[in-house]
Length: 517
View 1: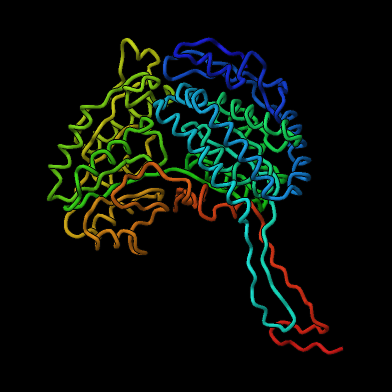
View 2: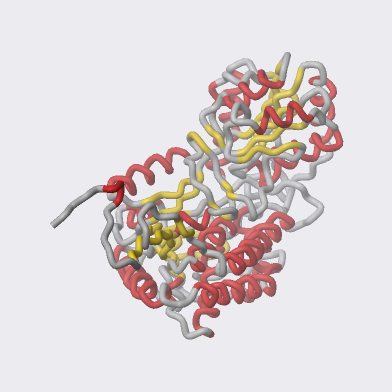
């Protein structure tokens, strides 16, 4: 990695994270060199080159996999609570480096500095969760139908876990997977987004130092760099029993099919088309911040971003005016300046997608309430800063049916009972996050019932964005069905085994079968 001095103290952050003047390529912890092509990382904040990373070649990948598979053989023998101790040390190191890592996340990806710090806090939180979990990887005892027998279920490490992460959460999603995989006894190979490769190098440097200090093999944590072709190394590799992939539905279809063809497992976290239902009893003091942050946070580049507001016709005008008024108070600019609410989109391709979506919505009959557009002039030189847009639309518009990774919010009405709103909310192909704003208990319970939201996340009186690590994160339908982070999501990183022990002097067969010899 060839570091380039930049403004806003980024050079100091890079130095603190060990991202310095070296050729960073595929890594198992040490500074291994690669002969791959250069990947240039430009900041969407100011358009400046942050650094260059070498892509992983097939030779590099096989070297990484050799290190990972060897490391697994010893790592799985370490007692789970001791594995938790390594994760504890990692979490503590993240506490020390929260400021520089959060700043790098903000600068390389473009999210606000507060969100950058918040992403590192998610890493710390999942480490805390995993440390406690390392003493609770419990199986169960099952009553046997045969006398003198006992049945039990236990969980074993699965092996090498492949992780493919997206640019929008360049460090948190990796940590959701690795913290759990590590305490389960697995080792990890991570392909970060080629749009934010420096964040992966920073994380790798942090964990590599901890592994070295504890005399553990560096292959427990590995990174590879590159585009989808490098990702294909993992998806087609039978040495990787589980691939966890975060990204678009299009990508997920390819990954899921490829991994399934070799009978591997995949954990898919794909697109969202998230809605908030706003009922007649909703409190505007809750509605406005929940809806606005959900729509514009991370410049609309979260899989849980609010895309649709489904508003009861009796309060539609009041809610519409309040949301439009709140948009007038938003500040857009350098995300490292904490006075700004919104930073840039990730790159010019994202800007073009945003502009095309607005034009498509207009062509389908949408009514623009808050005009979008690209910002120009001082402070916007990167060409990636856009204005959040609000458009009145219908749920069946083709553009509304698809996820656009940009700050475009669609407003629509519903009439009658809350069931009509739920039908609109569920009337898209994606099923990640959902919310209802209501002070009516019956409406809330209907929304949360089996006949309510069909999403993996369903909230009452909070927005669609901002999940806590204690709950399992993921969604249904085209969102992929995967679950990460809290609850019992750890089970996907392990293999289940049922044991039956006969401690009697006889051999009775199951189901009362007789087989006399």
